[in-house]
Image (cartoon, rainbow, N blue to C red; front, side):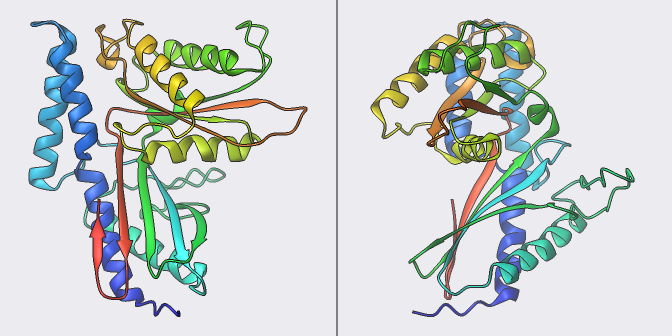
Length: 295
């Protein structure tokens, strides 16, 4: 079955996807923040900060304005039908990104690393970032995450064994790496964070897996029993660190912990951690020849 790509329709649909990602937190993230707020002590800085974050998210959605002044790196995970041109999809998303920047859904963030010049429209070398996969469905699925610089700065990658942490090449060693990352970040990653973890792979694919975890719902359960246990243990233990929202202390340091894994070389064991701030800005679009849906 051939898929007829209407690039004008796709462009307009992606502009809307960017608007939604920038201005509307997903409902599962809102609920996770509300749950965190409700368990904080009355009158505490943690409860006050979470209330402010929730009000900010509500106002951003109502006024269609960015949730945060740092609208982040545009990360697109794209799944396309057989026969659809990746180049055509990529160029259409670049065009949509420029339009979204003109509409102020995005702040100009793409800076040339050599010259230091900002392109002014969020496009440039590997900006936006694209990862393509293929499926047999007659639809294009685009998962978009906007990842701010503060959270990216406290993301990390470890090589096991790690003598400093006394961490071996096993899930217990992975656990120690995650605890170390979040404890080291304190409030700098705009806690409470969402922690995406990639176990294995190489240095590049490990972080790709970690960032892909950020698209999972806060409420889902890992299909791998051992990883599900690790996610639950980390969520519980990280929230006992006392870092709290924006580092002001409290019981809510993370909103969720999501783990993925890949095969690795015998000589390498990487643990990649993608720290996402409380403004977990991600939405998914499914685009067919006749309709567009968002979630």
